[in-house]
Amino acid sequence: MSLGHGHTANYLDREKVSKYIALEPNALMHAEIRKLAGAKGFMESDRSLLIISCGAEDISSVLATLHEPNSIDTLISILTLCSIPAPEQTLGALVRYVLKPGGTLLFYEHVLNPRDDVAWWQRFWTPVWKIAFDGCRLDRPTHLWIERMGLWSTGESWGKEGEDEENLFWHRAGKYVKA
Image (cartoon, rainbow, N blue to C red; front, side):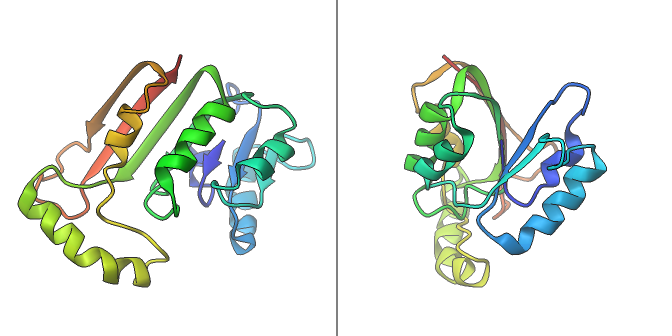
């Protein structure tokens, strides 16, 4: 299952991935998801593509659409957790109720910088930034929330290669396996 506008389909191997599920509440983005997923061989007509038209925080709708709790092998989030209204609770529910035991969470997000001076500027700009960019927040320690969930058998996160730590858009990527 992927959060966002479908660009993650570009990185999937159709020989290894049997179904692509996109979670995107904005119906205007669905055509782009279909286009990107279709280019990789995922189609609604053969049920290898499913677009769930609700927000990630609407866990009951996600579960009703999936018909089976804890059935997703991999949950992918790329630059989306910055704009979800209650990201800790939402991600916690997705991992607890949607991701199967042994399933993997993959993420790449811009997050709160560990440098106090840069974090100050992230907090300073976030009120304006989130208005201009549809709720996106520069100051969320998403990688730390994920690490502290206590639901993992293994996990690690890392920075973007070559990224300067003085960057307002500081990134972390990670791979965590649910216990």
